Image 1 (tube, rainbow, N blue to C red):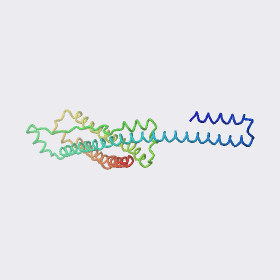
Image 2: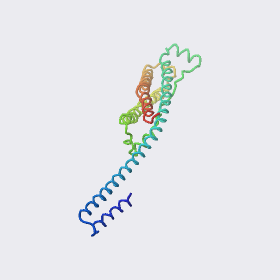
Image 3: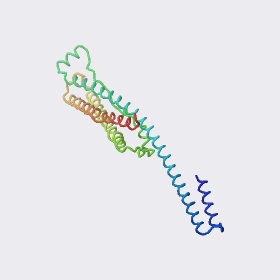
Length: 235
């Protein structure tokens, strides 16, 4: 394309220098050559823009396909975490329901009350999103609705899950601290202690709240995003 423009620029120069043509002929030829040059430049810019846009959309398609896999894994992780919360909550509630006489019976038979431990950490995948965002390519997504949902999921809902999990873990460790603080007491006395029971009650409340955050907020948006991505990718 550059060679073609140079060729027509030389023709303009030769036309100006050509003494055999009249001024009117020179002007006409120059206008034609300028038009050709402008057309060539415009076409070159358009082709470059089209090629760049096509490359960007190919990158978006790859990103969305990878993001779909991440979201599918997120849903599985969410289901696993919710089950874990349910399981520990049920166990804690059973401990809270134990009366003094029931505790006496358990420990007199040399049995023990099992206190389940399940800490929760980062379970959602953010690598592909963070990589695409940090490279400044989020703007390549032309569907504004889809782009906003992706941003909401990764900037609001994923951090919210991490935050409620952290809060739960912190309170779980407080339960351990209380156990250590009351090391001089037997387990039977500890589980009968009203203050300790209040701590476990709050832990159950946190678990129920986190189940709500997972099931009512994060998971529905992940499911919705998968549908939107399938639509965008034409599946």
